[in-house]
Amino acid sequence: MEKLGPNPVNSCPLTPLGFLERAATVFADSPSIIYHDTVFTSFQTLRRCLRLASALVSLGISRRDVVSVIAPNVPAMYEMHLGVPMSGAVLNIINTRLYARTVAVLLRHSGSKLIFVDPASLPLVRDALQVLPRVIFVENAYEKEFPPADPSTLT
Image (cartoon, rainbow, N blue to C red; front, side, top):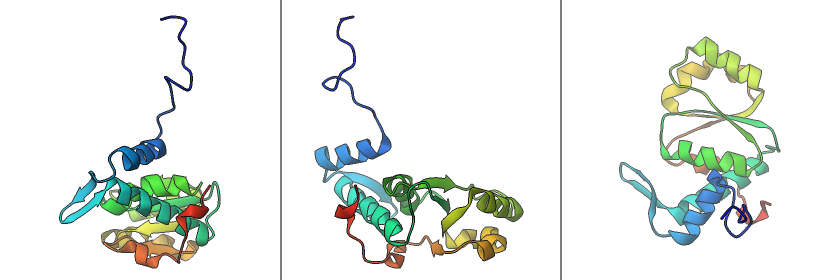
């Protein structure tokens, strides 16, 4: 056994993106997200994350740009954890329990190009809204804010 070291046959890096792609292939019709009355399969989740990533690129988000999110644990937050890295951007999750002044400092310091905000968290970001180029509210259909996008263009 000592001679059998890691190789492409018996070892592959486990990443969240690889996990999602595998789940969408192997368990395509299995539930991936269940939140109240909302249910997405693994395949639907992959498509939604690809669409998010493509939309971010369409909005001008580039590799290493920072995208911030202030939201509770809702389906959109889960999708952000996967879709933002798919676009090449850096995800900056900001705790909803912080003070508004702290949130403003974090947003400025991170250099966020875009922020997704749950409407309930809006008071936390009011001070920082003047320095941010774009804000998208995370609601049930937040993806309606996205421009038309083709996920197949992502590399």
